[in-house]
Image (cartoon, rainbow, N blue to C red; front, side, top):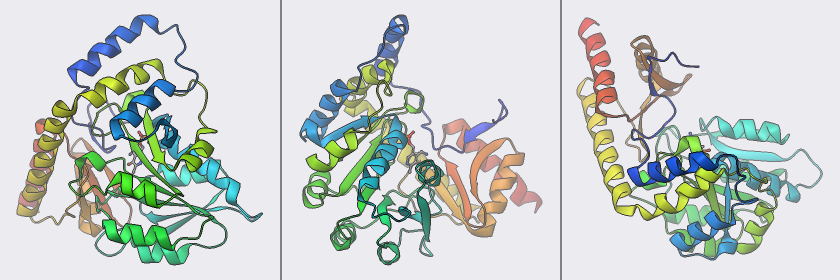
Length: 335
Ligand code: PMP
């Protein structure tokens, strides 16, 4: 647990509370908290499918991207051939992936990012073995914010053997200006599930709701692992309102991108190097990054340190970003 007075820039949370329209439906939900939500979230599934312009059968909804990835990994286990199944992904990455692998008794194989902090698709491909049931590609990547090139992604997906399910984790996709065409991806690759969440750009991390999109057959297999009542009623009430608020969301995303680029430029100005990422965070690679991360910790700013690799700073509100800079400037001045 973090001390109450720490500034939380370690979990890539939104700098903003829920949009007013979403907050309003959440308030309305309080008085029916004695009621169960839908058994499995068909209503949210319909709304999300409609929003994306795909059929309901191509969607699953779960308890955050984490819950949906857990479902997808469970379904992927159908394809293991008697050996210990393996999950392959680029590392460092989201801490949840090795945890989910362990829960499912899968081996976790991390393939190092390239020297620019990018996912090395060639290295991922050559790491796939007969035991590999799933590969996760995270784009924008956590913690570096790099994105995979759309054409290279298609070539990668085409090159994989049929027994491998690919999870394209797009938790940060709303912040990216380089989003691949979702319809083309799922139409061309029947073993691909694209996973998104309401936790990041929509600022609803506490509600625990995310979704996966893919080929109908793959998704019917993944929906078998939807846990009854796992998506709460407040979460289900928030989904349509959050999706309808496209203009308000776009303003927030635009403001966040501008704040990210400003923070990055200010960090450069004091001599720190950053990776130009597409998430709601800035990554400072190398030992200097790690050192700056521990410094921020001592100044009351919690950030995500990746030992031996760098530090990730979530872009916060104006106050938090100013605090980051003040702490770093003060130390630069005394160094
Ligand atoms: N995937 C990635 C890449 C993430 O960074 C995170 C959260 N840090 C998640 C998934 C988890 O998202 P959710 O809150 O939707 O479970």
